[in-house]
Image (cartoon, rainbow, N blue to C red; front, side, top):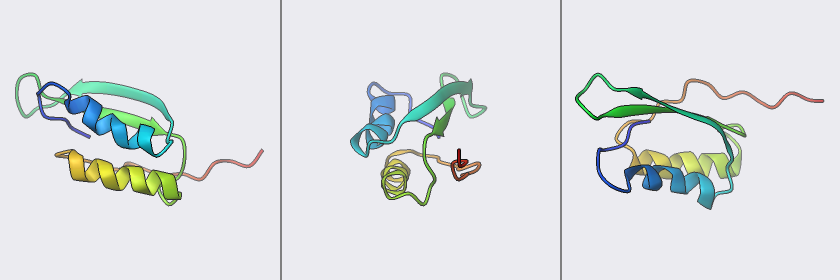
Amino acid sequence: MSAPNRPGAMHELLTPFAKNGVSMSKIESRPARTGQWEYLFFVDLEGHQSDAAVARALGELKSAAPFVKIFGSYPMAET
């Protein structure tokens, strides 16, 4: 996902996960090639994109973020 370079932008992008009880297991940033001080953020979530809470969070995220791409969504392994 990407965030505009302004105060509070990341907070707005992370809020849907907290609000819907979706846990993030990893977040990292990489410089975007679109301009100075612009970054892409890669996030690993706990849950499948078809899970109700995850689907709601992703829907809200897509409304707030300029760019969102899902690289994969995998069911949890049975133990």
